[in-house]
Structure formats: structure tokens, C-alpha cells
Length: 76
Length: 256
Figure: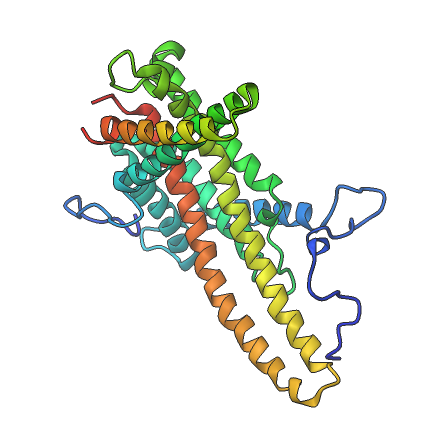
């Protein structure tokens, strides 16, 4: 078929390939962690009226959890 | 001839809401027509290209084969390995459709991409979302698939912290960013081209004589940005398809 290459052709690099998949997953774990637990912290803030500290704690814990997830899921 | 009296400047959101082509059918706008035209063009092109296939391909056949070869080799097999071939027709179609509808944004006379209305990228992202979940559930069964997607390898006491993040990043962020990325690129591209083109007319018609030559600069920018927009168009179609294929590959993959 037109455009067929030989089987020994090396894998296409750049945007294609599982490396790109991991990069997007890493970013979404990091941002997702901050957003999810920051939001949980914000809800606790509204409930307990603690003026912002719970949001900050939630965001930091979420960031740590995001980094932990990246290390576990993508580091093996 | 060079005046554009009815168009407002700077272009506002009304740019993206053209009137219906026929009052009796309020849903039949330029966008609807363009989507139908895109689907029709693709169907007719691929049908005609393979009507009388030859060993030494004709030009149309070669073009169609190259497009499918790209979808099969680089996208399906590149992201998923040999078993990805059964997804190759869908990825090729998806890539061609997104590329064509994006291209409408710079074709003179049309200059509006259906993907600059978020509804169309949303539907494409919904199809990808249902697809990667369905394929994973079909292979592994629902319980095992969700356990595989949501439960990372971590000690049990950390899991309550991690599972909401996994859920958010796999089942919420993925479809949202797929659609939003395509929409935002097409929306912004059209806006910026509209601004520079209309600015050229406004400068030309301005009362200050020294502003009139600047309109040429504005139009030169519009031309340069059209080439950039071409790059963005191809890239965004490619990214959408690559990410969809990687999500499907991830749903099918064995855990390490």
C-alpha cells in the first residue's frame, strides 16, 4: 500500500508515542490533585469559616498526593 | 468596494452566531451546512478514491491511501501496537473530519470553522470518552476496569487521598480538555484573523491620512497569521486523534 514502510523503521518520536501520554497524565494528576483537594479544602473553609487556611492545606496536600501518584503510576 | 459598512469592529461574539439560512429552519445555519459538507466531501472522496483501485495508484488513490496509512501506522499502531489496527478506520475518519472542519476556518469565502462552536468538539470528545470507557469495560468487565483505572498501587491508608484525584483526572479532565483545546484554538484563531482583517479596513477608512498605509501592515499580519493558523489546524487535529488513541490504549493496557 502506498506509504508502507519496512518493519525495522524506528518508532515515530515527538508528539506520538507513549511518552506524550505520560506527560499529559502527569500534568493532569498534578493539576487534578490541587484542584480536587483544594476544592475539598474550600468546602471545609465554608463549613467551618476558617478564612482560607483549609483551602491552602487542601491544595498543598493535593499537590503532594499528585506528585505521589505520578511517582507510583508513571515511575515504574 | 473596500468599505465594509455592516461589520462591527472590533469583532464581537456575534461573529460566531450567523443568522439561519432560511427562517423556516432556525437550526440550519452556516455551521450546520459546513458540517454536512465536510461529511459529504469525506465520504465522496474516499469512495471515489477506491472505486477502481490499481496496483500503481492514481493520484486520488495515493492521497487516500496516504491518509489512511498515516492513521493506521502513526496513530493506531504507533500508539497501540499491532492490535490497534481495528481502530485505524475510526482514527483516520476522526483526523480527516477534524482537519477538514478546521480548514474551513481559513478557506476564503467560508472562513468559519464549525469547531469554533463548542458543541461540535464536545460531541467529538463525548464519542472518544464513551469509546475508551466502553472498550476498557468490554475487555476487563466493569468492576475490574474501574478498579484498574481508579486504584493506584499505593498503601491502603493513602488510597482515600488518591482515588478522587484519579477519578477527576481520568473521567472529568480528559473529555473536558479534549473538547476545550480544540474549541479554544479554533475560536481564538478565527477571532485574531477577523481582528486583523477588519482592522485593515478600519484603518483604510479612517480620517487620519497617516493611518491609511498601516492597513497594509494589518493585512500582511493577517496573511502571516493565516499560515500560523494552518499549522495550528493540522496540529490540533493531530493532537485530538493522538490523545484519543492514547486513552484507548491506556484503557486496554495491562497493569505493570
